[in-house]
Image (cartoon, rainbow over all chains, first blue to last red; front, side, top):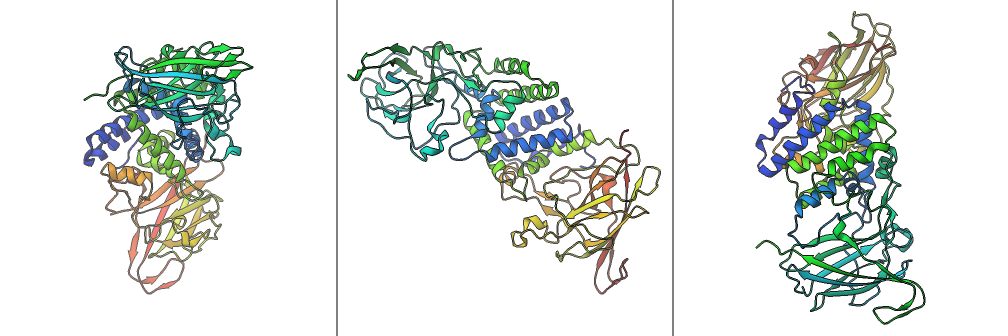
Length: 289
Length: 289
């Protein structure tokens, strides 16, 4: 096919997919190219704008490394991540809802014991979490893997602090006990801006958006026979609950972080200053047979 | 806004653009996000597929460097580049048509004199080009900048040969003379596959597409008072003219590469073996006032 113009390119492209041996891939490429082409026609994209787009995507890829995933951040801030999470996690009534994964998970978080302090010295007001992992009928799920990660009082994850090197802090992986319980000490999460020193930050600035996420703790919970749950627990009262830059807030995920001015912490520690407690139940949906 | 699902995410995203001070950017982001979201819903994109997409885009960005632009290659092979070129280059009747820019242009090509051999020793059958740059009424355009680049007989551009370092060959920039002429020696272009060792190559393989481009020489022609022309001249008879992997072939851009078995070349050189000649006129459109 020759002399392709801005309209005939779409059928010409689709005709090239006829030898694709993977029907699902063909379906995805068909929809993707059709929407990409329609977008470019609809806005009458100029050559300069196209090149700006190429440069933006290139810079986004080049900002990624083992500690930073700028394309996930782009997907998050464009609302794509929450869309994909929502359409793949229609939990049964009563099950804890899912939300976005975010760009700050790592696969080498330390394994920690029940009751441990996983803050690792990260700055923040102490927080004592008493969580339970249960099935829809309320029965405990033992030996669930509970992966926790969060930002510190400066709004930074460990991986955002070059001075820490590969040291992990304010994250850890626990196993639920026979009662489905997971108890640990950490720090109270605070609201923070997503990283604004890269292409996504420039996009947010150029489009007049703030970069803030309401305070939250991430949980990734896996248990045999149950659907994996990727979620957060947010702090009630946070000023960004209604304008989360990644669209991730669900009313059912707002936890009750109780502030105490001083006293005996749940683990028996005598606290001379403020601390928080959080009791939270996670209800996992059964995996399909 | 809370409890956003796969449908309400789109209006929620668009509501975030109300403080965008740049109406054109707002228009582009509105269309882009709407199509991106519709695509993800239409194919019911799964979380695994989403992650594969994130990894694909990341790898594409990380394949880019000063000598390789994998995102341009992706745009080219998805038909987006030809779409954007077509809708921005509706040339008046008689003007030479534009086609895709491609990923192999460099900005530091050598300036060469009229009649020079710009092959720089690149392997290939000699080619003698006699080009003219004229306006729509046929009058010559003097002092036009004519930037030429092409692959060699192995189907490789200089920048694809690590052993060459920063040496430039089979490319150069000339100035048209008072008659609008640009004469140079180079080599006959051959069909070649686009680079298949990166993400775009994997995409082509997975979708059952060949990676070939028909033989061509690139031209980027700039002259004061005229629209810049980005184009190729293709070789008649090439087996890939109807299936160019980047959709760039236009009938009007197929040149007459005349093969000679031996004899006196246009520059007076006595040739004991085969060579080609190409006479080509480029008609530039006047720039808008």
